[in-house]
Amino acid sequence: MDFLLIGTVVIALLAVTIVIARKLREIESVSLLDFLRRISSGAEFRDIEPAELQEILARQTDMPLLIDLRERDVFEARQIEKAVSLPFDNFMHEVLIEESYDKEQAMILICDHGLKSKVAADILGEDEGFSSVLSLRGGMEAWEKYRQPAPRFACCPSFGS
Image (cartoon, rainbow, N blue to C red; front, side, top):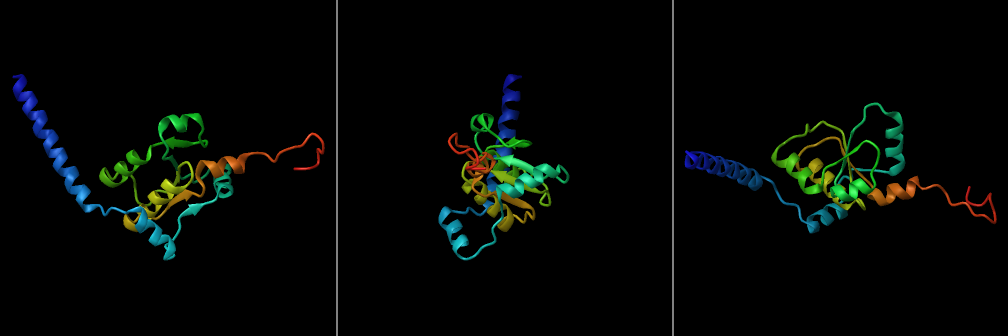
């Protein structure tokens, strides 16, 4: 009886593997070189500046999904309010393989320096037909610089304000 259960599980896993393999063959891989060619050819950029994101967060209406593509431990150390953690590989799998997201859903993608999120936004916008995907320009590094208050100097209180 255990052999029947094991056999059924093996067959189910093989079927899932075949479906995933077929889906992966349909996806066109985008290399870094191809991405750089797109940049130099004037391909549309899907970026949002930290100040624009701050305005969206302040409005609190029509909020896009804020998806942080960094690894979970990095996300837990510092994140943007209302962002959800979904590491890059997991996110791309959910979008491309599982087709878990509506192509009209507004999303802002976040990473460390803005490169992974830019690549993901480019792939989703140009290759997959997503209409409202943006990348936080400069990533968390730019966000933290934007959010830091201007330095105050003890010798000259008015300097830096």
